[in-house]
Length: 355
Image (cartoon, rainbow, N blue to C red; front, top):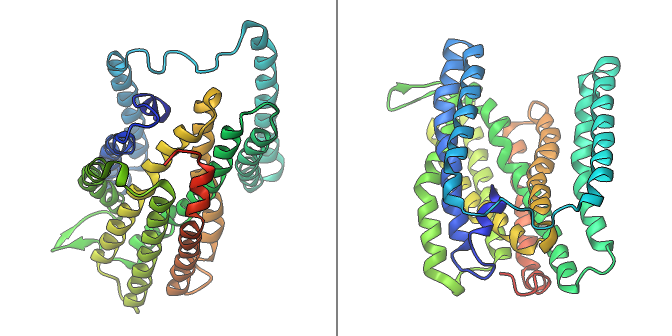
């Protein structure tokens, strides 16, 4: 879908980043509603009902998508670099063998070694895939020089995105544990399940995405280039971790105010809107023309890679003090933000005309 959004705009259209911000609003409308419904059913009624509601939501989403095809004209109907009839059979054979081997390996690991071994195997695959993709892209013979340059820039943005999600997606792990164990589950006397904190970020996105979209359109050619937007996103999430340090200090044997988490999610939302939709837009512009869809798929692995590393870091949550844990995360992402700011100018040169 993200690739199709990119196809709605020309590469040099200044409305492109704003368009991805509007697309982001649609995603987060669902992200707002889901925890309210699924979280309530799961936590307060029955977990089976919670998972069933998620399945119903997916079915409704597919139906809406099929209904909306009429508005997309030919976008997404044809591959940008279709496989020829001669290439089809060998390709299907390789995909079948490779996919079958991976499934067989995971089954063997789960049955004979344990679930943890399968988890580590999936983690290794997530790490290996972008390395293989970018390595192959940089060594492909005959690739135009401008595509090689943009691919190198995309690698830097990919790494920055992975660091962003490493910290940001603690919202689904350690911040959720903090919400459940160390945060008062009421605001102004109104109690709610801890899972409802997951709806705070989407609310802010729905409120702020139009502001960011309007800002990018209003600034036009004067808007900050992609590396600067990335740096802003990283540094804002670093600030949010500073707020989490204060929240953790405020616990001190009791429970922190829910407003601490609300403040954290507000700051993180501003960082997310400065980086995530911009990253989606940049990946469609920097991708080799014959592999825009594949490159977008690899781009989403930056989230997976960040979550893989973030999941390992989260094991420290019970091993160190909470202020130290959140402070460590803040330092990691602050260093990444400063580094992105430092390399912004040479990175723009690598992007070869893409801002």
